[in-house]
Image (cartoon, rainbow, N blue to C red; front, side, top):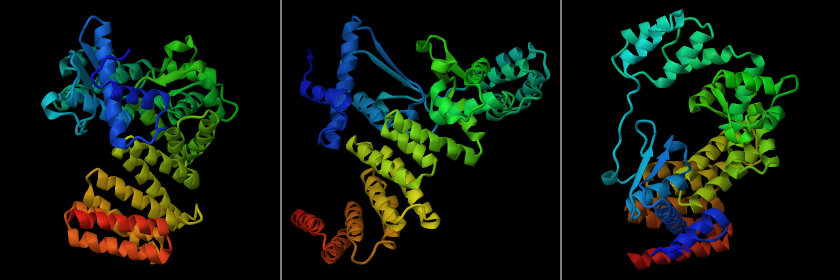
Length: 431
């Protein structure tokens, strides 16, 4: 039984999130409000079930959350529940979490004290530790990343030479020493995602690689860890012990091999009915222009339905990049129209997010590819008119809308023409 003054919004939010995500025609702003109401109710319910103990919501690597979830958390912080709540999140410096300024504070983590790190390194008595200690002494008096210290210790135990100054370079050296099979398994796991299992890796890696022993080697090296719910078998499931391990493993892949792995991952994701966002990302990284454009357009539409403009902009930018590349490669039949469509949708998304200058630039660039009597050109002109109106350039907005109406009339798009004429009437009545 839900006891909440916003009971209807909570029920709508739970239905949208759990029962039928994006299955209704709920307006994006209403869906966003309902999702925040559902999260607020869940927090209050957790507080009541635990005898009103304070609730701590910990979020690691906030930028990796989807936009809809970040919006819900931000909205809850803007109108917090009536219970003790502490939200702690980590993110890189410079990232804008979008949280209310009066209710949040940021702290920069400095790492481990240099004297403590030096003491640990000197106890190892190895050339690797000695070189790392020397670099720390020569460097600035600042904290040492725990991951760097961990990798130095592991590299030393593996009989490594002088330690590089950057943790990413140190990880590269350790990956190179894994052996060919373990390295290929780690790279394939990085293509799959944060988590992988032996069955998926076997489908990606050609025969001749013993997946079980390769994963055991990766676990032993500390790059991945066995999922606890799998019963201790790496073949049943592993996950990367740190996001940087996955990023570096991907960076060590040659470009051609990476595209091939993502191409196989697209097929595997479709067979397993993976979320459309996963399939779209694999298709984009595989540079499969036709499938990627179809999937990215759907991803952008879903993001817009969730009022997630950031997610829509990212998907549309990727689509526009592929469409522009297809102009020179000939990957699809009508790349000019693909560029026009993705430019228009990206311009709309940028305008909704408040990036009016970027939106206008994208839209005007696409006008050069649209035909003089094309319905796509009419839609571009409409989008430019909306941007001009948002920038309070009203005479220009009215002229652009008139041009859009004339272009729609020449193209024979009756529904579009009626919609533009209705918009002109609305603007005239509002002025």
